[in-house]
Each structure stands twice: as C-alpha cells, then as structure tokens.
Length: 111
Length: 114
Image (spheres, rainbow over the protein chains, first blue to last red):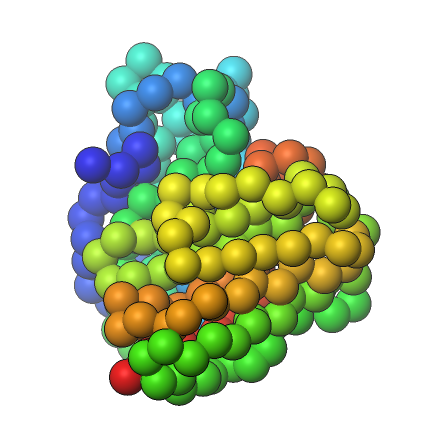
C-alpha cells in the first residue's frame, strides 16, 4: 500500500460547511504537503508542514500533523463551490528520494 | 511567469509508436520529475532529474526514457507505446531536491494508446 493514504476517498458537503480529510503514512518524514487538483488540471501546492510543526494555517485551510500517530488532517473552513476538487497529501520520507503521493480525497461542495 | 509548460495536452498513439512529451520550466528549478496519474493509484514517479545532465529512475521507469540537456527542459520519451501507458502525465519542478519545498506542476498530457 502507499505511504500516504487519504480518508475518506470522497466527501460531499454543502457550501458553508467545513470539510475535513485525513492522511496516514508509514515511515518517518521530513515534511508533509497538501495539494489540490481541479478536474482536468495539474496539482497545485497548498501548504507544507514540517515534522517539528503540529499545526499550520493558510487562509481557510488548517493542517495538523501528529507524528506519533503518523497522520495529518486538512480542514477547509466555510467551503465554497470553488473548493470542489481532489486533495492529495504527499510525504517527504526521511529516508527516501522522492515525494510520495496518496490516492486523494474527492471533495464536492454543493451550492 | 509561465511556470511549468507541458505539450501536447492530448495525444492518441497506436501501439508501438514512439513519441516525446515536452516539459519546460522558467523558474530555474534544478529538480524536475515526471509522474503518471491513474485512477485509484495516485501519482507514481517515472523519472527524475536533480540537475542538467543527471537523471535517475523512479518507481515505474520501464518503457520511458528521459534526458536533461538544459536546466529548463526535461522531455519524456515513450519508446514503443503500449495500452498500459494510457494515462495522464505530469511534469513537476521544484527549487529544492525531490520536491521537498513543494512542487510546481504542469497542466498535464492526457495520453491514450490504442
């Protein structure tokens, strides 16, 4: 199985609600990154959290990292229809030579 | 500020044909990589380059070649296309090694092999 695995695989919410998705990984990391992919487009880097950080904010995004549980969560507050996309976590493994991406969470925000 | 430019956006090949997917970046990034994206499998690394003249294999390199003659360009060559290579291909670059400071992705090439 993959280093980074997102949960849930899909999420449907109403505009204005919060969306939370989780990422679990297996080995020690230097940092963990979250990306957004709109349909038919490339991935866009959203936020990076280092292994010695526990929480990070960027606009309506809040990321947490629990290295003891090897997990991270991405919270999108006050969601908008434009937040409809797939969200991927990527781990920079301490002993690896590449970023490893998870399978993504598909988020649908209904107006 | 073009970022990462991939061409073509769409391509249909017949089995056995060869082609080159182009990738260029204008951010002076040393690290560049090619990923393929398949449903339910996330992104898998094909090849990467840590700088001009240096390339290495990722996790799924078979059937693909790369070269890096300049910092800006990192083409991906399919030697003899197979239906299993039907996928969406993304080129990405980063300032730091292996994307550790965050990747900039191109918009992708959707390839169908028939």
